Image (tube, rainbow, N blue to C red; front, side, top):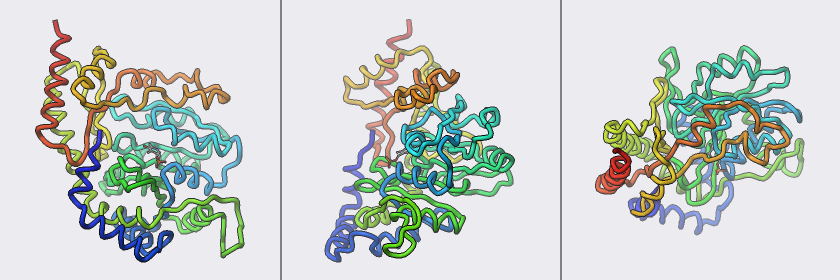
Amino acid sequence: MVDLVSQYQSMKTEVDRAIMNVVETAQFINGPEVQSFQKELEEYLGVKHVIPVANGTDALQIALMALDLKPGDEVITPSFTYIATTEVMALLGLKPVFVEVDSDTFCLKHGDIEAAITSKTKAIVPVHLYGQAAPMNEIMAIAEKHNLFVVEDNAQAIGCDYYHTDSKIAKTGTIGHIGCTSFFPSKNLGCYGDGGAMCTNDDALAAKIRMIANHGQSERYYHDVVGCNSRLDSIQAAVLRIKLRQLDVYNDRRRAVADKYDQFLSAFPEISTPVRAMNSKHVFHQYTVQLEGLNRDELQAHLASFEIPSMIYYPVPAHKQKMFSHFGSGSTNLPITDWLTERVISFPIHTEMEDAQQDFILEKIAQFVESKRK
Ligand SMILES: *Cc1c(COP(=O)(O)O)cnc(C)c1O
């Protein structure tokens, strides 16, 4: 699905030098690389505070911890997402309240949010799924009206531009009260291990987040709140600084691969190509299509027989996961979510995709579809 080896080869000298520099100076934790990366990411995103942490799941957890929610409080979120988005809610004793997604954009269906709000609702966690922005204008308006926090799960969409209705442009992750992202190797901005970050424009929230991520410490050995230990290490920061400079190029490259898929696949009514939302500049973390009457298992097996990977993100929606059975969410009526989990499939997309590789993938997809026509 990705080709991180070729990507590394393309910047080997620079990356090797940066990693060796960390090793030789032995500033593994909170060193100058972390400080610089933080500043550079703040500049790139146009946000006041970036707080790097150990991974994207920690970022989501710490963000929710910083909001002072009480056990039993409810958080509105999509079910059609990676498990980390909602797992941290349950871990903190919060109740995920699952809301439907839009069948075209795969992101929260804003029109369904208000019906899910109760007196216990405290926050909304939209997910910018596959690299496309959720409808933040509408979500922020609902949040303001009902006095709710918004924590963006931006793990799949770093670098995505969101166009506000007043034509102002903001990066996803900087629109809600807190934005969370992941630097897992295969993400659009990936490091060579685990990493993540939160961002916010709120000084008080930033201070709180920093404290929670560092054992709830206000000054050394004085611990004010129960926190955790979550930090980005210097080697990862050194790699991320180099890759951040390429992020826009990477995202352009992903869009070019997506354009080529779109163009070719538009000739096949059996495959619905991704819809690009008006307010969002898609960064294509995944290229995910919907199959119209084709057997997904057979298509995957056909591709696999030519060593072409494909993935199902996600085969089981969160509301049907066993881990949430105590919430009784399995019976929640989410027909679009259920329908999507049965018909989505993601094809390889990455920054090093060569024309010949993609031609081969497209040829094999076409071969399968045509073999099913009578
Ligand atoms: C990857 C991802 C996460 C979690 O990030 P990790 O760094 O793997 O912990 C959370 N939410 C979404 C939508 C993701 O894709």
